Length: 418
Image 1 (cartoon, rainbow, N blue to C red):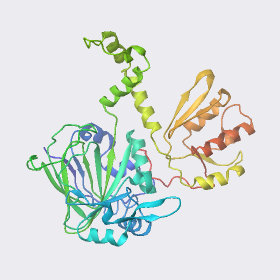
Image 2: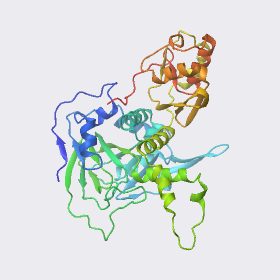
Image 3: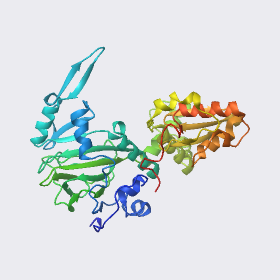
Image 4: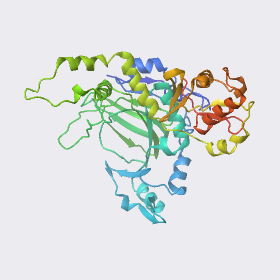
């Protein structure tokens, strides 16, 4: 079994508006990836484009995060030869009122451990590093599932983790240096989150199916459940591992069963025969239609997105000056659904919020939800008067759904378009 390898050809550097999926996979298209590789086979995309991923994270960014920002655990950790170094070896707690800054990096100790072979792991970059947050949101828009990102800065000839598998698919983006990856045949096919595995003394994974070296600008896709290990070559290596978390059929069953808890017959105790009434199985099956499954999965996905609110302080400071002719746009990072409510009301569901509007504003709200270009409150269709339109758009600026364009430039993010 051989993973697909794209020949090394010149590819243009990262353009500001390039979509996240294109940045990751180009020249492989979305359809080919989903139909031929996703959950099936590893994929290697080799390029001659050494600075391709600098817009997400660069060597200079890592230096700044570690040495200048007083980074704290769990935003980072050190690993070496398959194990995690104790936090006490390279962090301290700084007393402050009313609490303390716990797990703060001791930069000199971090640097010494790194020079001695420890890998610096920057965790959950999608939560605290804005360029990575934008990139992950772009992938979420393109693939329709939650995405996370960690970075691994490994010194030359060192190894951070032993052979293991991940319980989610990953993209590996080689940012700088080069790293040798060995990928083995799956031990557990498509494992769930609680089906973790790592090689122990009694485990034999055999010879690697794939033994490759990633260079700066290359992408590697590894489906969940494929054991792998990576070792930096004769130079320091920085790569970003991007985790994909699509819902599974098991998740769909669990979500349908959770809805059954509203029915008393599902809550009754088992009798001595432990017989399960067939009619309850039928009721559960009735909740597993394609539309119902898709609705629950989408709702969980939309509700679970974290707001990316760059510039929000400036947005609110300028709110009272927002006028009918102020240029507005949807935040490019918002993933939202428009929902119909009783008596003609409508709701916007996004980022853990459900913002409901009365029927008289339904036309305007629907137009805002569908807006793909800048607009003004005066241009919205519908019957709201001027005062009502201003109330509406100001509310959506406060909620983080809309941006005032003259207060913050738009369109510089890595987008989700595929």
